Image 1: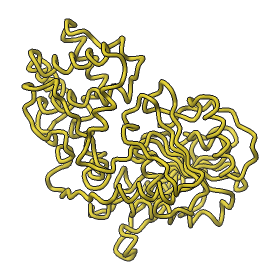
Image 2 (image 1 turned 60 degrees about the vertical axis):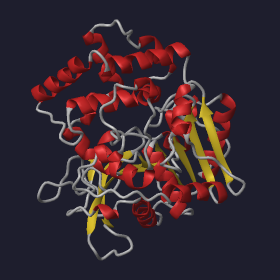
Image 3 (image 1 turned 180 degrees about the vertical axis):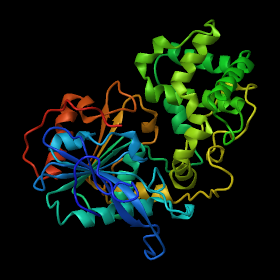
Image 4 (image 1 turned 60 degrees about the horizontal axis):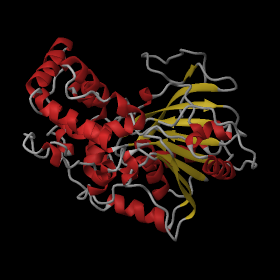
Length: 426
């Protein structure tokens, strides 16, 4: 850690933040920090980069929560508190992941972006801060951040006293995506599934040219391009294929009545589809900041390619769901099939002090983490009628009490429960 605390807005020479104090919730102080990490923890003298962090400080006597969302720090404000932080009334360190945001080595050696190097970033940071924050440490994250939380525990199981991973998929065999297909085939009512299929067929059927043209004209007006994906038509096909997964992650059962009918006008259909899949996210401007995410999916984490027999005869681009679609050709992709099975075995045979929290309707639980005979004090919870944005607060009362008690026990607190009125994990 560099520098000393200062008043809000202070910067060092050259205009870059040293330690900046930000607005904070009552009882806290919030700081923007950087911490210098080796590009390669196996060879620490071969270059470094500055990893961005935010610190919510309450008291060195309170537990510390290590929080990651798996991406960069712009996805949350400096005053954001994760649910475990609220439950234990603790401090919080939020980390920007390596190769995201400004936490990126220059030049960029993509071979140094893997789950062990990222876990070592967390380990080194914890080792640096534990002499100051000597109370129990907890780690947490949601979705890709939940995955990163588990990977850190795999390689450094004793860094923290317990972990809560929200909505964390566990793709142990990247060649087989049938679990996701089966899961989506059971979500919602037959009428809801049929309505989604009808939208897919409309987007890639008689109205395909109009919809792709509309997307292309919008991009031209806004100055956006589709060089990475290839074209507006390719974006349309890719997002139509993935529509069921996005719908159940973001909308869930409550969204079934809002799916437009095939007879809906072009404006209604396009607007709803754009809201469901986020078409702007496939422009080069929006893909570039998350290239590291697709790189990780294409080299270690694995990805889901959905089967679409209902779209037979309407698909033009075989293999478009593969991660190579999202990653520039100048960046090599070589998948490591042993990475995720290794983590899965550790959870089932050695994992301890772990809580996995899933939403009932979330496709992330099509391939969930599971405990095994060798895991200890490890739990899997399911929140009813909930999608990807899940929380302990949304569990059934009995599970909520158990998950809360486990977390407070790991944090070294007494058995009394704290209010669960905070925002869901994301």
